Length: 624
Image 1 (tube, helix red, strand yellow):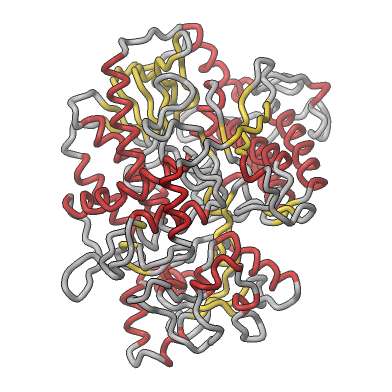
Image 2: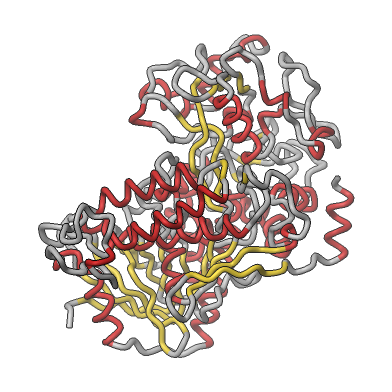
């Protein structure tokens, strides 16, 4: 039997971003024993990269804003594939969660009379994003951590969970390891909340940090939970493109919210070329020189740069492909032009966008107060994830909950900017609340020592690989066809790099059946290569070993994205197919679900969307 230390909890939360912290705070407030596991250091969660703001209909800038408008915006942005109940709960509860965060010490930017200031963002009818300059996510994490540290939560930093353990179908615990020492850890838990974030590291160009390897998605999938809407990957329109060492780093939508405009190499604002009919009555007149804010009208007039992210990203790709891109393969994002309207523009930009100012100054040698930025699409967010019950956030596995980016339902085919942070707060709270309720209503479960031994053996297999051996999971040398010969051990970094290239080139912003079927063949070949991964050294500080274990998760989520994308033969939101460029009304009534079949193969199912009640249909109709 492998050596491991056991930690007993009522509720285990995996992930210490906004959703995980909010879930842990809620669960611990009832007196439950709560453990919090984070893959990196506490405070380094990817939530800090959410810069623009948190969406909530506070109505401080425009009194016409309310939960109904926010609900309608979210449903329309998600192309009506969102769970209507999750969208309703989110819109109703987000204002209270923001005010709660303020009461806990969050220092938001203020209006002249001292209320929380809100800014414009893509897809939102009114200025709705409460913000702290362009560091909103950082302030959220600081506030939640400061509040949570007094709740008696056990925190396990630099720890990776590799398996969910069950007892007679329900959650019993989780098995993981300390990344520093390589020591195994067994977490006994009556309920588990997954809040591990997204899958961005499956792609070559991404705004996501190294932690985002689809851990929660894959853990839930292997435990028997359903994944849904995995075809919908959001490519943020504006990531850095130069220099190459920083390609993909996020350029917040807040730049466009503060008046930044997109131009091609001809200096033309190309976003005016393609404004969807549904947004025409919400978009400013075709006056490139116009200052694009209004606050007192039912019909918000805003620049086309603040259309939904999927649309803006495709317009940028069009300009690049047609030869009107910037010198380094992007387009220009210009905030410096506002000097025509503001005499103190440079000071205004540095005050409203301090992180962006320093980011471009330090990394690209550009002063954004005088010079346009070069930007291009970057893999940013996955709308798909683990299916959860809208009210409780519980998955199809009893006792297993999910919240934040690794869960699905709220965003449908496309997430509106700013909805991610309010998503974390609203459903992080709900996941913690219902997880502790489940833990109280259900006794302790038993963990089979044989299950622990099997997981440990799988985790250690890369160290035991020898030429000709099947190192990591099932497989055989005869089928390891992508190694130079069947006797060669594989390097985990090379496999990860090859997977990222496959996903970037074949399952990216613009997709075709031919490319995606080839991607699935490539993924199968990469799986066989992954069986032969070999790492050297010992378990302490071994990044090669960590990468080898991450491959399991990356391969699962990559296959899920590709299979779901093949099944959706239409274009909608973040999923654009060149061979099916139009929407299909029938597919607009279905979600694509993937799950692990009895034979271990990935199964795909089309699931009808629950019909929206008449009261909410009327809300949407009134907001058109």
